[in-house]
Image (cartoon, rainbow, N blue to C red; front, side, top):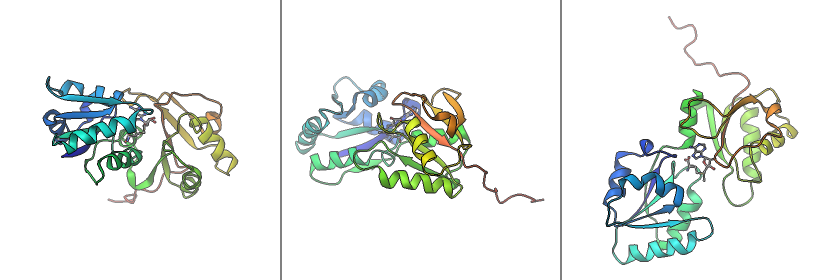
Length: 228
Ligand SMILES: C[S@@+](CC[C@H](N)C(=O)[O-])C[C@H]1O[C@@H](n2cnc3c(N)ncnc32)[C@H](O)[C@@H]1O
């Protein structure tokens, strides 16, 4: 059996109990170095650990797939939730195995940011640019989301579509410069790394572990106004 498990982001506190159980009971635990480091306290002495980076991920996943086909119970850990900015890695896992695999969701950095920024999913669109390939449809979608009066939680793409590039794109495509923006670099902190307007975001640099909340110009009505 091979299961993909969402872990984090960045801290063991945000791993589900089911995910923790799968990690501790696996023969083989694999994933990107930083994510495996998050679950390391759950590892037992006799488990095989396969860590990887962007460059060797295909070769390392082939190694994990071979162990899986040899009958080992394998877990591949993903940063945050698999379903947000994780599907290309999932595709790589399934290509290596030659079949679909089980997934266990995790808590996403987007969910954590929604909590810190106090925005609800109903009024907020999650968008990631942290993916290979053409970003154009996602950029257009972001522009339309803001135009429609929704908040946006955005994962940038290191290093060609970072927060300042997101701002530059939106401003040249008609977004209002007054949108309030928060950039968080480390979601375990209590405060945002930076807050300001879309106009003020242009030209500012952040790390590759940054995530943005772009607020709608006007909060939506809650639907409870005037209730006795
Ligand atoms: C490939 S995406 C994976 C996202 C992940 N699947 C999730 O649900 O959070 C990696 C990006 O997520 C964002 N991210 C993940 N953890 C974060 C954290 N603790 N603080 C800020 N951003 C984070 C950063 O933008 C990072 O480059």
